[in-house]
Image 1: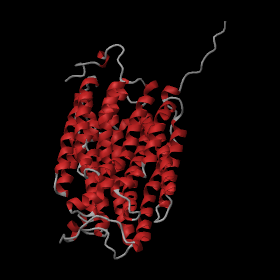
Image 2: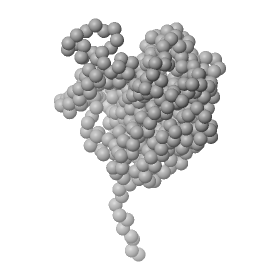
Image 3: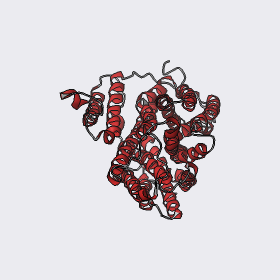
Image 4: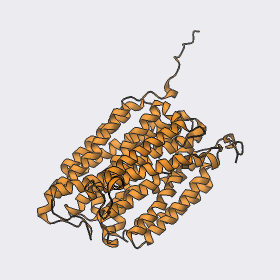
Length: 508
C-alpha cells in the first residue's frame, strides 16, 4: 500500500473525530485494566491454580513484557497498514486470548495466554494515540489527549476495584472473560467510526526488534527472580565457570543492560530506518515526557501489589473490600480529567506536572505510613484521594506534551516510542517491587514461610507488624522513582504552538 493510496485529506468535510476516539477508548481502557486487575486477584489465582507468589507475579509481568517489547514496531505497523486495520487485529487477538485466560487450568497456561494478550494490547495502543495526533489539530489536541490520558490513569486504578468485585462474585476467571463482550462492542464501534487514514511506507528493523526484546527480557527476568535465588546462581542449575556466571541473576541483569546498550548503538548507526527514530528525542519535551511517563507507570504498577497483600493478609479484607479502598483514587482522578484537559491547552506543562509528581510521591509516602495493623480507614481513603488527584495532573499533560510537535508521518512511531517507555516502566515496576517484597519479607519475617503451596491468607496477629512493615517499605520504591520524574519535568519548554509572535497594535 503506497502513501498515496488514501490521503488524509480524504476525511469528509466537517468530520468529527470524537466518535472514533470514544470507540478506541473502549479497547484502550480494557487493555489497561488488565495491567493491574490481576493484583487484587493474586491470592485467589494462587489458590485456584496451586501456584506460588513468584509464579503468579509472572502472570502480570509476562503480560506487561509482551505488551512493551513489540510497541515500537506496532506503532510502525499502524503507519504502514493504517491504524484502523492494526487496531482491529490487535483487538481480535486480545479478546480471544482473554477467553483463553479465563478457561485455563494451570498457571503456566495462564502465563502463556497472557503473553498473547500482551501482543494484542501492543498492536492496539499506539493506534489510539496516532489517531488523536492525526485527526485533532495541535491547538485543540489537549482535550482529546486528556481523554486518552484520563483513560490510562483511571483504568490502571479501576483494575483492582473491578477485580475485587469479580473475584468475590463469579470468580477470578471472570477478570478475563469479561473482556469478551467488551471487546466485541469495541470492535463493532471501531469498525464503524474509526477512519482510514493515510499510510506511509516503512522498513522494519528486525535486528532492533530482536535486541530490544532480548535486552528487556534479560533485565526483567533477572530483577524479578533475583531475591528468589539470593541474587546468585539459579537453583537447580549445575553449571561452572563462565556459563554459570552468565546464567546467574547478576549475569542476566548485566547482560540485559549490555544488550539494551547495543540496541541503542544500532539505532544510531542503522543505515536504513531504525526501530526507534532517535531524531524524535531531539524535541526536549518528547524526551522528558517519555521519562516522566515511565516513572508514573512504574509507580502505579508497583504500588498495587504490596497494598493488596497488606489489605488482605493484615486487615483481613476480602478482594472487593480491599479494592474499595482505591475508589477515592479512581473517582477523583476521573472527575478532574476534564478540568485538566482544558488546562493543558492553556498553560505551560511544567506547573501541572510538577504538582502531579510532588503530590503523587507524597501520597505514596503517606499510604506507606498508614499501612499498619490498626490505622484508621479514613486515613487510607484520604491518601488515596490525593493519589488520584495528583495522577490526573500527570497522564494527560505528559501525553499531550510528548505528542504536540510530532510530524504526521511519525505519529505511529512516536506513539510507539511513548507507549514503549510507559510499558517498560510498568514492567520494571512489577519486577522491582516483586524483588523488594521478597527481600523485605525475608528481613522482617525471617524463617516465616509467606509463599509456597498456597496464597497469602490473613496472617496470625503476631505476624501483622512484621508483614505490614515489609509492605510499607516496599511502597517507598514507587514514591522514590516518582522523584526522578519530578526532576525531569523541571526542564519542560513551553509548547511550540504557544510561542506566538507579539501582537502589533493597529493604529487607526
